[in-house]
Image (cartoon, rainbow, N blue to C red):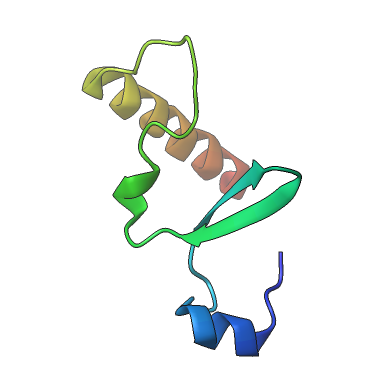
Length: 72
């Protein structure tokens, strides 16, 4: 979503800054997110978090797949 530069400057948004977008009484509310960590919990899921070992294994598999593609 593009926000006109005059409004970005007036409201203190950086060009590539993340923002919360919510709806209130039929209007969009756009608020800047100061820190990426503020987004924590914004996505709801019923899945349990991956363990460090599971993340490591998935990353290793991904790297191996990319390497295999380059070797073809």
